[in-house]
Image (cartoon, rainbow, N blue to C red):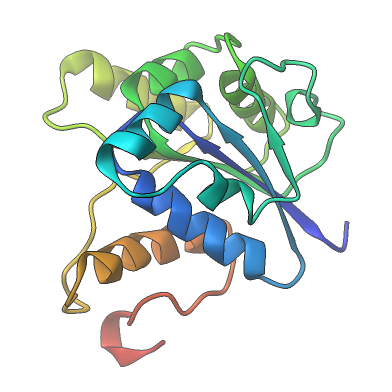
Length: 190
């Protein structure tokens, strides 16, 4: 597959700014074909926390799927892709993914990603964490997912919220092996 398909799923957790930054980068990256799934809860959080709309994600994707469409291509293991990011990942979605529940397209696509041995990055967004959250993170990690809490770093001396968002977005992209220059790396390298 010369073009890399990447799935970006957005759930109803706080922090949709990260998803918009990822969509912007992935939509513009040569050789990347972005496929998005935006949950109904994510659409509400976008409106509550930002001036962004679902269109700010959709405009960068070649396809956007409804979370209720369990017959969409990402629901099948025979539909090849190079990885999936769930960002932000709500604790409800984490629980469904950790438990192997295919209750919607996001959960089903994540389950398929794991069963096919593809990279799944779950950008969890909650604090504090309770014991159930931590057990679900461990279960998802043991199944092969990368658990990447939305914890921006400060070593790059961010000057704005956008700098903090881009730093985490860049680290997420690193997990899929996608070169990016969204932030100043440790040691001054771009």
